[in-house]
Length: 199
Image (cartoon, rainbow, N blue to C red; front, side, top):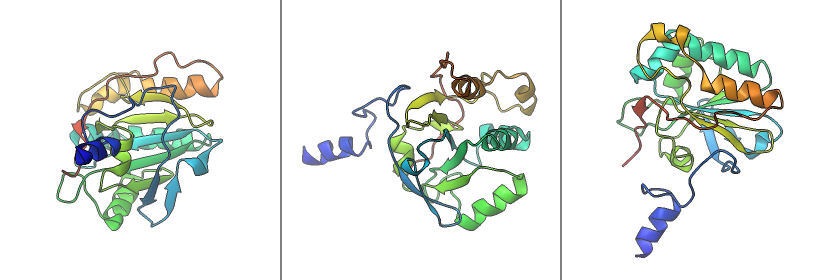
């Protein structure tokens, strides 16, 4: 019984104690990036923060990187002062798991521009945020509240051509919030490959 309660408390079961829904205070986290630097959510209080779950082996994730869409979004929003953290929760031996050097090489090759790429091989941050797919997007406001979680857009395919005609829920959320307006669609169903958590 004690082990079961502990498992629930750590968020390792399919039944989290608290659903991570927009409007709640986003849970603080501590993670290490591909350059060895430590990042916490609380250190970015006062800024918008984007969390992007990534897996370079996932064809859905590849759609956004091979088309240049994800990199363009990263540059656009970091240029406006948004903190963008890519999070890789793939476990060792699973699709998308990378070493720090491998991730830095990928970022360079793809000309990606997140603020940092957090390596989360134990799945601690991923489970904390109940990240389900790659990509899975989260937007946190300057007060630390979650204002959007879900899909990057409305085209749940692996076709690069669909990027051009997709409607970006993620962009809508950030544009509305930064203009002082309510986010009209605060939660959508994420699409992509399942996050490859450690068993």
